[in-house]
Length: 224
Image (cartoon, rainbow, N blue to C red; front, side, top):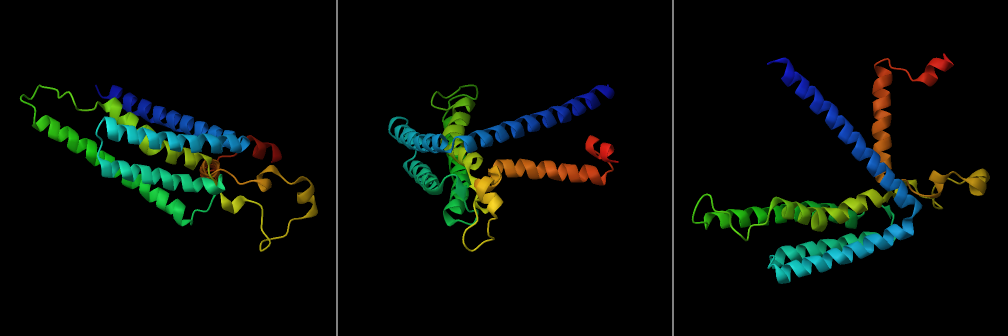
């Protein structure tokens, strides 16, 4: 068989493209939802941070999770909480925002090392190769911990935060015309979500590549 593997590769590429588009559309919708309900989103994220801090404390006390790693996770969520002071606006050069990005990666590395070493020690102490230790967390449990306690809050913040370059101009920036003051556009009154900006820039880049390749939209045909 030489044709069926090619069909399999083609199907994988098409499926990956559809999955990427679905994820991008979902993130775009979430960003729109947060922009429409900023106050509710801020309350939800704040309560979510407190919930995960409490969950990490319970895991440390009940399931004997390592104390230093737990303190690192709690401290990281305290730093994430500091980003809520000007929610949903954020400066990409803000030291607190940069520290949050570093802590996300550090938390992922620390907990990945913890679970991998825990599994390695458990299987080394097993009497037989076919024995399954009882105290080894399953893949579902590990993935759930990473999803809830490591990635959920940073991901939610990334979807919710808006770039501060798009907020209302200050006294040191360009003056606003009277027409903008009376009925300015929606994008001028508030910042655009970073996810929306990323998706729109990607779509604009795809459109430019298509234009360079000679592809024209239906509007261009009508104008010509």
